[in-house]
Length: 572
Image (tube, rainbow, N blue to C red; front, side, top):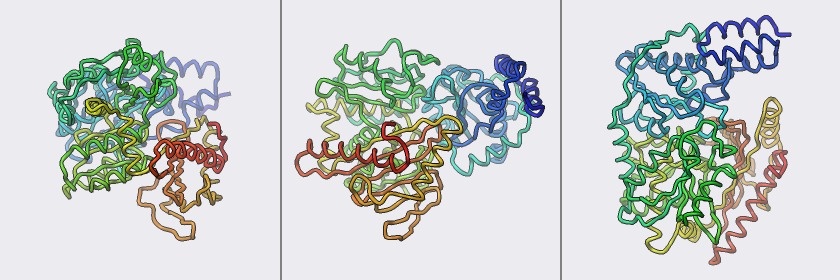
């Protein structure tokens, strides 16, 4: 039996909804009296948070659909009105090739145009880094990218960038969210369905490519065979063209994955971090005898790399990529103390050691590129300029032209380094080993628990409460030195002292060990996951192989014991 209040909400939604598919879906739920289905559609609205919203497609405020996009855009326009006259402000809009992306872009453009804003929008799908670059290059007030990045096929999202080209951060997200909540019925939001808006000028794309090419430090070294895939996403044309412009002509493609396909038919999950996601490109690399494998996620903001090693393919971790690129860029760039590198708090501390070796500043921020971009921007008035920022989840920002992770420019810089090393008979693995010999083995690993529904949320709450209320005294045979609770801003030391955690509040808890190792946990901001981040630091006494073996064993033991401390099974 459907309550009258829920039925009335559904009827109002159907009356307002411009999409016949979601109208019909909601109508069917009403006709059959599916209270559970209707309650799910009208549960808590998609929360406007990590640079926007993201969720499964479907009707109602708890799903991604045209009315939710309409209300979100109206809230964005209302917040932009506080910046000054709307007709003097530009908003750039782009989209990926997911289901619903074209319709959501049209909805966004229509609301912005009706509000009086100047709007530019690409008619074809574009990678997220190009949108972020365009906001900065065109000095736009804001940018919107319709994308769910590497989420599964049934999802879509709405990502917001602010002036300067970085993702929005607190308090902007809360201010926009408040305007969205004030919209009321989204069907009453004015929409200019006939809006004819120009595409960003071709010069934007040309400037982006020039900026990427300028990141090359070794343009004379190009003897490299690359296998590449965009995983059914929108970065393929841009990456292949950029590599060709840089002189990398020997690029083997995965035909089944090169064109955008919103169903992602050849992968279980379109995230290059996921097991099996790189299988086809690794097979292609084996077929052609490639020296390097590169892959992007569907919207092009992440990059993965793999290298041949002892008769198999070794996929590099995000920490390995970020640190080896930082060493390359710092070692070959100008000797300038105003250079700065950044990482997230859940990424490897090896970056700090590399920065100290080169005498440059290093930052550690909350998870998310929006925080690294903000921290770097705050240092720029002092003369600081960014060399690299990275997060362990295969996100890399090289330079400062794009203030977000950019898997396209990063792919070029990885190829650039690999070719330079190959010209001296060396490879990326050798460069990683060099860092271990200098700074010790920093072995990182991750574990994730997928959460579904109320039971999943209860699991998160119980795990975090357990760690806060009964933290372990030791992990993997090493004493716990402190518990860093980023939500409360408190670091509780083993001797009882309390100090401040210098980050904005976030649901993240870290267990810091006496030898510099760490274990951290947080719920994901974009996926239904509880994520664990592990790092052990193992000195190298001359025998690198032995140090690597010890680090591998220690990180596995750390993972097992940390999951037990959270009350979670060891096999996740």
